[in-house]
Length: 438
Image 1 (tube, rainbow, N blue to C red):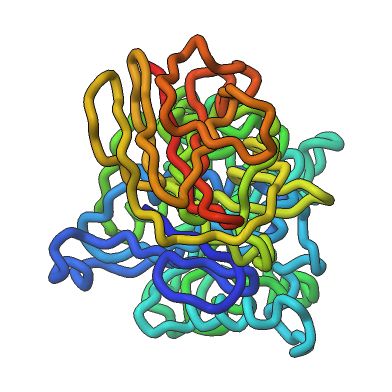
Image 2 (cartoon, rainbow, N blue to C red):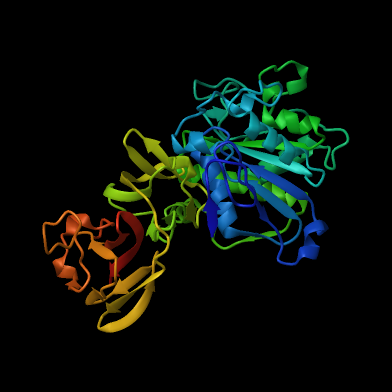
């Protein structure tokens, strides 16, 4: 389970607005961590390049590292990702040379630099999506030296003092590995050596050149924006695997690597999100808009905690609504009802299909026939989509409620099977339970 927060600095898999989330993919046996090199894997420095951060997300969810260590930052620029913007505060990948301390991203850049400079990091791989297809010589407007798509990038041939100094050999071998799995001939990978130190002033501001100057073996992989998302992710994963093999970091994955499998994993219907203390909601097949959705008052949207079994999920405010995003994808729009959250209610007594049980607040319960909420002192229940009165503050405890009793437009999901039960104590929100008819 990943806990994702979005404001102040944090640790482990807690992420914040002007900080980053780093997750370790390490062997089960701690002693095996130092039996192979350590790689830093990065993506999402530009928020509109979904191939990279979807690849890091799948790597975290579906790969195992058997020896050595891979430290992963699934998305470096989460605020921009949530708004599908290249860079809300300018191009973050041009801030690694000099940067004004008043720049909004200064703390994030410093954190990234500290990760790169760690003595235990041997190599860095930075994932991007680029336009067209790179070719060493001009062919046409799509295939030419100014394009960035489907190339593997180094800043120079060699990094003296690095653990793996021969960047050129590593890059060529990785490219050979990628090209052994091409989907179409036009997608062939080529080496792009920017020879940054020889006068490329723009690339001298970039992350990989900073890494080079820290004596790290740094590489970048570009997947073409001409490709559908699953194909971009496919090539990014091929690049990751190719470099891991070059570094002799053994790994396993739990799926067959092809675009169809990648597409299925990106769109996995088992993905979920949990906002604050509310129940887990499926990421996919939510209604396009959820009205009158309770959110804590006096809390800025970036401060509302959200958990997910994916690593690229977050909330972002858009005018009067709050968007639930999965990478660049809008999963639903919340029309918020801001209210005080009272966490004192822990469980309620319910009868599910004629069987009494205690149900924890924040749960999802499956119902075949009917449910009944037992009355509680000073607590009322509002079953969204079920109505027996026109009261502003209804209490729907004490009713046997069946699937046929619901107005289906109030369901949480497009399949009209999941419904909200909201609990209130005086004027405060005490929690939610979801009922799922099966």
